[in-house]
Amino acid sequence: MTNSARKFLKYPLYPPPQPLLEKLMIKLHFGGIIKCYICGKIAKAYIKDWNLRETCICSNCKSTNRQRQVAYVLCKVLEEEKKVSFKSLEDIITINNFAIYNTEAGGPLHNTLVKSRKYTFSEFFNHNYSSGTKVKGVLHQDLTKLSFKEQSFDLVISGDVFEHIPDPYKAHKEVYRVLKSGGRHIFTVPFYQTEYFDEVRAQMSKRWKNILIKPPLFHQDPIREEGVLVYTIFGLEMLIKLAQIGFKTHFYKLYLPLHGIIGPNAIVFEAIKS
Image (tube, rainbow, N blue to C red; front, side, top):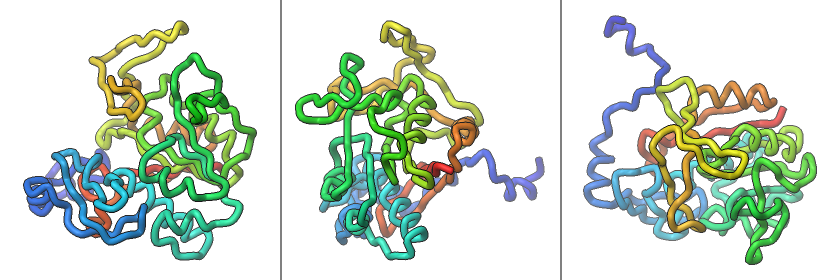
């Protein structure tokens, strides 16, 4: 392919060279003054290390770059749907009869959404519990076997959760089942912008034993000190499989430095139940 043609190349999505501004931010451990889409406040953003997706932390609500990405997409898609301005998650909780399910029971997103009247949240503890059980006062849910009735929620939120599920598409089918018609699942997952197929790194046996296909990769977890195993890193295959389930999925790649959303991996998915 000639150089003149490469400028029109749209996929794979090779990241551009890192902007000098971001290099300076990392060096200074400071992401500037931002308007946070979670707490709605003007705040300082602090950068811990090179992993911009999981840092650029709001000095007010402690949200990360990735968490604000979810909040931004949620606010903007609901603005378009409801013809009302939503400047932060604080505005979302004012919507009447809007049922939200968050697959996490902690963090800045949860701390804001918990004020909503129709808000449900959960954690996954281990396979010894049945979905719907309370563990230390927190609802346990296995996303592949949700205890909720069909068409229970207008919105499901998950942030880097589905890569830790041995059968992620069974979980997506359950999300589809519990969403109302036209409802949406807004989520983030590790996603290869240059690959076509999902990378399956591990599987689980019928006796709940992990079978490693690639060297083990763990992500930090608020419940498990040792971290949680990554089973899948996703590629374009995910969009096809979501369409087969019945979702219409939008792929957002964001860059909003004034809101603390920077770096090459600011990717959010919106799967709408058709």
